[in-house]
Amino acid sequence: MSAAAIVHPADTRSDALRRLASTFVAEGVPEGDARFLMLGVLDLRAIDLALHGQRVLGPGEANRLEVAAQRRLSGEPVARILGAWEFWGLPFRLSPETLVPRPDTETLVEAALASIPDHAAPVRILDLGTGSGCILVALLSALPNATGIGLDRSWGALRTARANARDNGVAERAGFIAGDWCDALGAPFDRVVSNPPYIASPVIAGLDREVREHDPLAALDGGDDGLGAYRRIVGAVSRGLLATGGSLHLEIGYDQAEAVTDLGAATGLRPGGIMRDLAGHARVASFTSTAAAVSA
Image: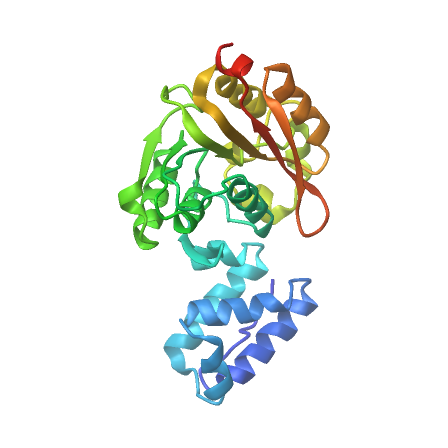
């Protein structure tokens, strides 16, 4: 971490951004993080930098930016510093109990939407391990007549998810319930989605520092083989959590496609294929209900 101040009250916005970017690169931090921090900490738009880049920071802005920069250099992710992040083009608050929404998870939203021929239909959605609520809120924003429930074990996460539903105008169609995976639910749903913890316990110690030290462990740890949550979910879904003709969509690790597909098929769910993310990695495993699965 840099000991000397990076930005100063007499700096212009443009000068401060150059100083931040240069320092970040020298310390192995992505250069683009400097811009994200400046825009977020100073509540600016990109056009503000373009049109008013020569405006002097002053003591207050310089201090806020310096504090944020030092936090970033100490290993704290930009999203944690700002307390919010964008997902599916929507703003989401964060809390210590929630993961930072990642672009890869948008693949899960895409898979669920692709399974719904009529986006005006009154679809019932269940989001297991809802966290910040980003998946459910994104789906409800795209499906004007859908309703949904987000379930999570963490009260802190549920408070954050409820606030995000309200901020994004879907609160009247979203409910949030505390529970251990599917234990608190009984009614069938048309679509079940989940980004469960899927990292094998022995691997967590070797994760990047930003993830290991700042993401909630409960949202990462998938048990000894990383498949613990999947077993719970496909088991509950196959016992009637999914309506006849409905579908289940699960975010998976890059090397888990075969294992998760086998788990679902073993319970009577019909595999619906694997969707890949923009990097080409297997990202979502889908299943559809069958008469055998629903009556199991």
